Amino acid sequence: MSTEISAAAQALQRAMSVTRLLDCGMDYADAIALHARTARGEPWDAAAEALAEAQFARAAQAEQAGHRVTARDAQEKAIACLLFAQMAFNDDTPRKRQLYARLSAATRRLAGLSELPVERVELPFNGAQLIGWLVRPAARPARGTVIVFGGQSGWGMAYWPIARQLAARGLATLLAEGPGQGETRLGQRIPVGGDLAAAHRGFGDRVAAAPSLGRGGIWGNSVGGLWAASTAASDPRIAACCVNGALAAPSLLPFRTFVEQAAAMLGSADLDAVAANFVRMRFDARRDRIACPLLVIHGGADPLIQLSDQQPFLDAARPESATLKVWDDGEHTIYNHAAERTAFVCDWFADCLKPAD
Image (cartoon, rainbow, N blue to C red; front, side, top):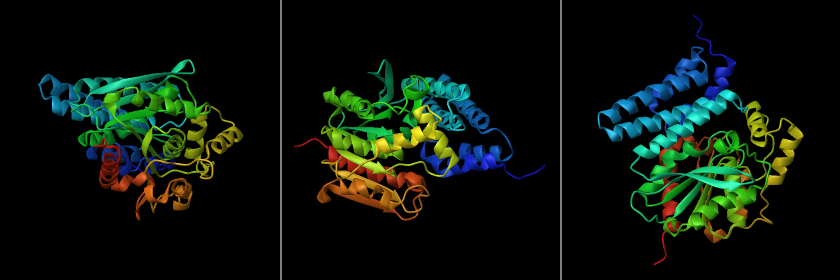
């Protein structure tokens, strides 16, 4: 039997490295098994879904036995498997939609198991709804709330581990799925080409509408970092902003996966339209000024983002309120230092958002 890994499997394993799988909450054994099974030729989505099935079975057995903590942990790990199962498809195929719908249903089930209050958020927008998940700390009220955006392929529950760490510090998290992302795109059919500022402001409105959520911060990862910075520049309610591995001036990078994901976000295969949309989203430090504290984090081994790509965000902030943190060997969005990265940023938000005396 040949042990040669197909080019398709290699591409998926590069895009979803073990460090990324672990960062988003996958069990180590599942992460290793996913790479091993796909190396042997098993389709990525089928292997990841099978691993999810095993974790769902563990969750059900534990819940039936009265072991709710074990049930919750297994449910979390199953959700992470489904998150990566749907990433096998860049285009919005029926299979991708089916997997993501199952992920959303599993998240609803997790809300009944978690010790943290979890609420599905549905915000009216252009005749449809923006979707998110509001995760509160066990002790209310929250000391503040962080809106978390993902990028082109990982959204929402990809940042559940981050939400848990923020909750441990008394902070709530709004796991936002903006236009072109997650269920907002796959279920509500809202692409990234509309009024992004209004959509992102809607998540801020949800935080501001609830005094128990405290002041709002925003944390964006990959292209979500661009949206976080743009929102912080346009919405004075944002009290702190973190940008993690983002292009201030995005363009069509010479990678097939990147191009296909960008097209799917826009809902158009017209690459000229995709490129024009990137131009529309550009952050300009001469125009876009960030008044709140800003944290930019960067990985020196990031194959997609150079530090110079993130410099405009720093240029837009006041020098005394801007912080740059670099991991010299950091991968894209610092997957390979996930625990340290998350602790550093969560502590920073806890300091920035703590209520005034």
